[in-house]
Length: 133
Image 1 (cartoon, one colour):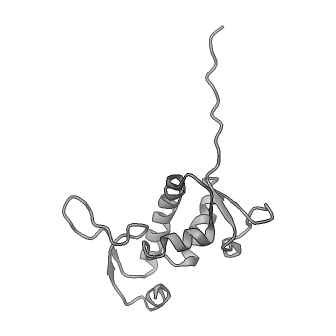
Image 2 (cartoon, rainbow, N blue to C red):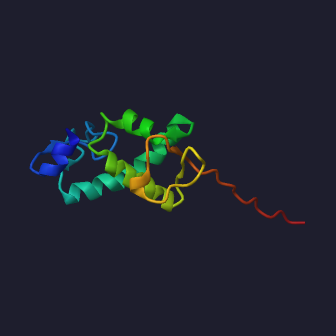
Image 3 (cartoon, rainbow, N blue to C red):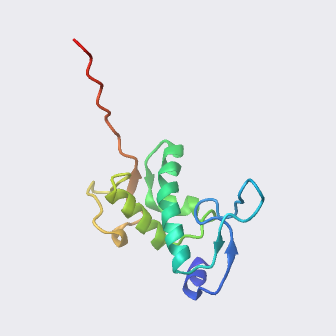
């Protein structure tokens, strides 16, 4: 169904661009986003995915297979699988996510991301402040 929406660009869906597709702005009850499934909506969706995917993985407290991310969020977002691949890959390039194949290698392109690839948040080591002697 999503493929048909994005390919036709003549459909309209009031709702969020990411994991709160059916959400509303809290203040006035208006739709969060007026999605026309066009190039503009695609850019907004990609930006929203890049913001929401790390939050979702953090909420789960565990690494997640890409296929599970697609399945868990299928009814929450207007994004297609390809858009999820692009967002995950962009986040990987920005070092906000780590993506590994089953063999332990890193993915080299968004289109190469497959269901079995594991997505996780990077562990960050924060330097300790120098203590005065």
